[in-house]
Amino acid sequence: MSDKIHVLAHPVVNARLSKLRQTTTNGKEFREGIHDISLILGIEASRDLEEETFHGQTPVGPFTGSQIKPKIGLTPILRAGMGMTDALLNLFPAARVYHLGIFREKVSLQPVEYYAKLPPNPNVDQVFLLDPLIATGGTACAAMNMILEWGVPVNKIKLLCILASQDGLNRVHSEYPGVEIWVAAVDPQLTSTGLILPGLGDTGDRLYNTMKDGDAV
Image (cartoon, rainbow, N blue to C red; front, side, top):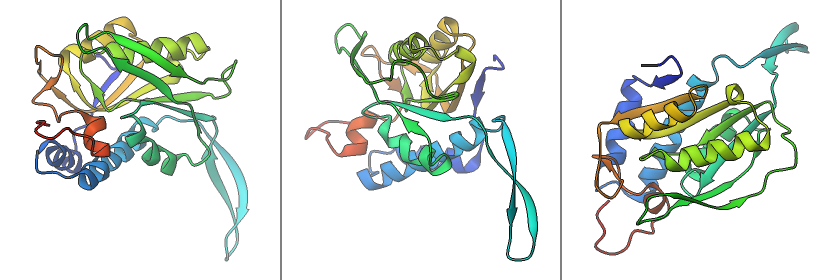
């Protein structure tokens, strides 16, 4: 596997993801699980962020501390990416959040862009693209293209996702080999309708309790 693709191998992540997969998991539990895994993804993906020092004072004496140097931007893909945002804001309280509206057309499975409110020029140094699921990879690729066209270089973008299909992961890496991808787990298959198998269902619907009566997750 490429050194740009990082799959977490952690017992806590595995347990949280297993809970997310279950049909008996309610909306509150699902949101908490997405938050917890996103927090771990954010910590792992930020290992190489540049630090700068400052001088401060403890109750006992002076000290030299460190803080994150680059300006951080978060670009969650609506609406499911919002489920990951609070966890990243816990890590980077001063991060700027720019929402990207993209949905997947149900017949063609092609991404459709419907919203992007980005300033004329990038005012951040590092972007974390938040997309809980990489199924076919089309939505993630469309979002990558939007951020690149905005002017952020590919080596300053990190894609964070909860679960990916192998095909979707391969597609994103093939189209954007320079982007760093952090994913909690990878499933081997897609269904004929482009859903990850076994997956965890529609993340947006499960986050916000909008499943239709009788729908399977």
